[in-house]
Length: 324
Image (cartoon, rainbow, N blue to C red; front, side, top):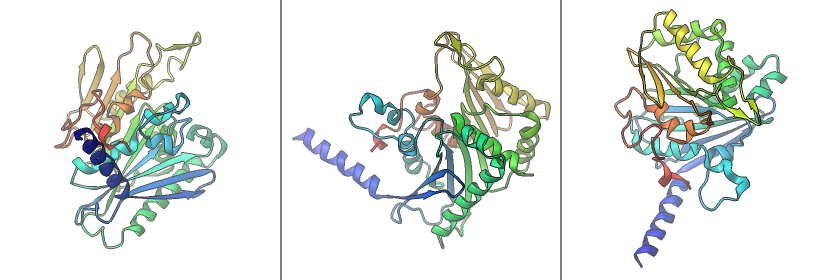
């Protein structure tokens, strides 16, 4: 009987979570794109609290549904539904970070890769700025009367090839807008370029102490797959992250560094910038594990009063109860 009651309660809670979300889909806001915006319901919305909009540019090869994730029995070919769980990670944020109303927008290229999409459109930086601005406008117009106390801030985040979207967006603007308060790369900064991105990032960070740049990566140059390296010696995210940290340091960002057998961690002394670079002497693939092990949650909460509360980056999944 107790087991039955527990099961019924769990089903009820999952149904309540699902009912407490509004899901809107948009196609071709820019050519060959798909966007799903997930918003808390009227009941779940915290009046008087500002909105934090997470723009999550999808990794290569994944659909929005796979990125959201789902539980239950999965077929072997459905493994992608159990490797990111961004929907559950956002639900964790909604319940545990009461400073904000969290909205998430999933950004998918029809080609299942923003790297491919960008290669097909010469004006992709301008397109990505247009899509970002359009999503912000849609969210604002859907919440009339609810933004008077702090408005809306945007976390520009990405995994894998989604980093191309973020980097091209930065390239498109003369100055990163003030409404963006976090820029987050989860093993996704392959296309980072000092000339195109660094000065804009530094200017943006210096303008407001509440802005944050988070970079997670792993040493992928040691990975051998089918007899070949998966990245060149200078093309992987581990190398690009070290380069980015060096370029920021050249422009006055002061870092402290901690290293152990698992990670090289670099933190700016003012807390605004954080790098986590996974050591990898055995050549393993950690590409998606950086997301799965509470990666997005930590990117959203590092250098806040909720940093590490109720979860641990690279620890066990803290969000399992939020998986539908």
